[in-house]
Length: 372
Image (cartoon, rainbow, N blue to C red):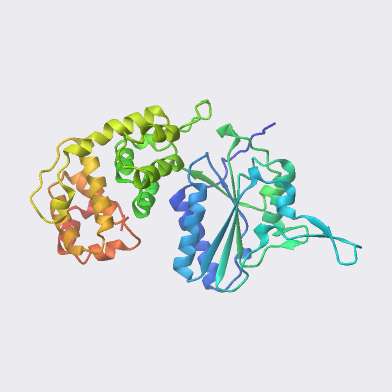
């Protein structure tokens, strides 16, 4: 039986904002040489596929970049666990007088000072209650039975809400009061910044830029098995990037991830790519026609961003593309420059060394709304 979990009194954040806030907190402790266990365990709430686990991996990368310490993420899907997986296997001591518990694999962590461990307890609200009890002991006391987490271990848990029609048990108030809760919501802008930096297929990015409502199509009342979420679109990107970039040839695979309707719309929309100017010519500074239709312009900015990301250190090519961007309608020119700034962290510093970008900033930079 499920019971309501009320999330009206906790902060709601995009994945990007959640990563930013938690990374800042953890890095402040680490750089001040305080123990990360001083931070309470985190509880992330959100719909299936919203990006909670991806956000945890991003936190790990941020900690590495800002502290110089190696991070190791232990991802535990509690729905697949039983209590013995967490507590360990009982056996006897040497003289057969006492029972001892063999240490579970999840407690085998590097305790050295140059490492930060992250224990991610996913699907905590959906696990059977005996597993939940053991998992909650980890989040609260950092122990299970005889086994204790090292001081350099961060604990983050995640679960779905009862409103998502997923299995979710009511969290005891005494437990809830000792966790830091965040409700993770979908934000297209946050997702797009991550997608550009992570190399998500430009057709996926371009389509979702054109159809932002298609990023998250989860409906708790629907019986459909395949539906669009940030997680399923990432899997679509992996198929296009690594299996075959021809949507027609992998259509059935894409449909199995996001549903036939979304797959068909993506396939129809992708046909605009055949009418785009040669992207290589644009970056070589050759004359290229500017598309007129909005769908073609979305496709063009996505394709240009992907090309720029692949040639990010060739500032001559980037300069030529910025000159071409001045011919685009102002709103698409702004979208393109904002996307360029998401290619990598602090890429704007490289862009500022390009005179064409500086001139663009003087004329159109005010439209960026504080993006830099």
